[in-house]
Length: 202
Image (cartoon, rainbow, N blue to C red; front, side):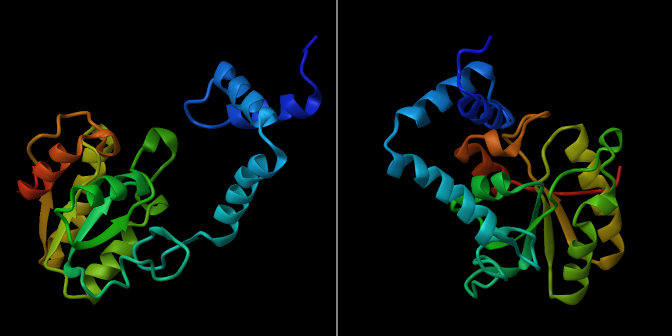
């Protein structure tokens, strides 16, 4: 028989659904919440509510934001001739921390993975192509992860961009094969942006 009341078990189960949270960690988090004063514990509930209530997807780059367009797309100080294509929000935050990039972004919201049922149509690739066609974009940086799925996604996008006459580059030195951008050291990512290479068809 479980020693915890049903409400605590329910909270543990919800924590357990989160990535990287095992049973023991879920139990510790639930007990932590239980020990907090009501006002402090409710701040977590309010924060979750506000994220679901106010966060929307930018209609231009598909970044998350409380306004549309997002703060990056609406910033006139950014270089709108360059678009950096990334898989997810965490990658954007990683690149922004370097302070070496001042262009725009395009969030794919994933990568091509046929085994997982993720096709090019499942991503925001069509939105990227429309941006390149409609605006004065000179360079597209493909900053997908340097693994099999990221490479396949980059290759597919490169082929789609080939006929549009835009320069296509790929992050370069410092990032080992198989790595994930969001976990990379800031200095390494900065180096990879500065040393990006022209991408060519294989």
